[in-house]
Length: 294
Image (cartoon, rainbow, N blue to C red; front, side, top):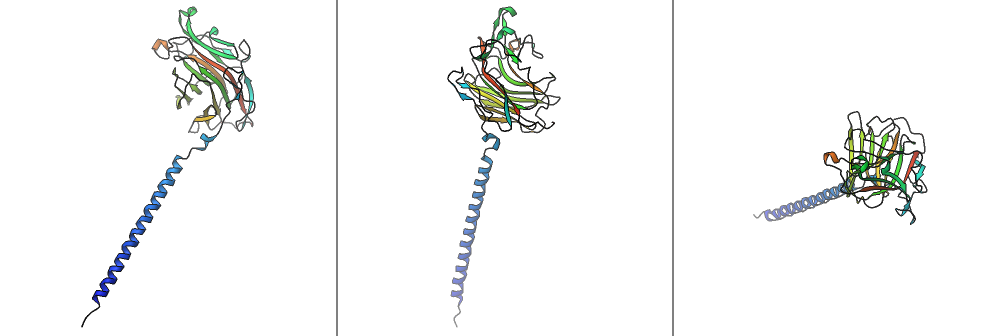
């Protein structure tokens, strides 16, 4: 008597084949899901941080300005309003600004002199050259807006440098002269192809530093926004650096300082020819509401 074994074998084969197909399909679907998750995840990781998308003031195009750009006429920075503008259109140092002289504290190789900071031709010029009045050593210019200090704010400086050598710095300095803190929002280190921004904080001088490749011989609008929680650096309207940790922002009155420094005595940041930092204009902003205590 014959059996149905052959038929049963075919059914088993069909069942096994179906199982394999199902498993293969399931694996393929799982693979697609994994790929999609990875792609989405990478997209999220590569998404720009919100603070990098904020636009800041650059100024207003004006062919009559030395830099081709005039100071902004409206705030353009959320939460802040303009409270000071200087276009350096005169021939003397403006009221409220103090010229640096002598040897800066902590930097015995440098020297400031009054003749190296001048206003004229619509510019504030800080000039480094070998000065016969100081044994033909390299002497630099420096100035502070010491007549105006504030806690929190924003600053714009339209500037460029004419050559390498001295460290060209735009910074905020504590009115008390008790250091730190300090916010350097444009510091060349004597180079022409880069700048850096640094906040000095804490009793042991902790630092948080950012670096940017940029042609410093071209005109740029450098800026900083200083709040209780964050410090943001921007150039030509684009943010390029920001503090990442709480407790870094200074909570004391500070002033805007512009300066050059040499370190020729230690063979660093020393020019080979006369060099200038040219400043077309500066703009100060204050918060539109009273800042909370730090």
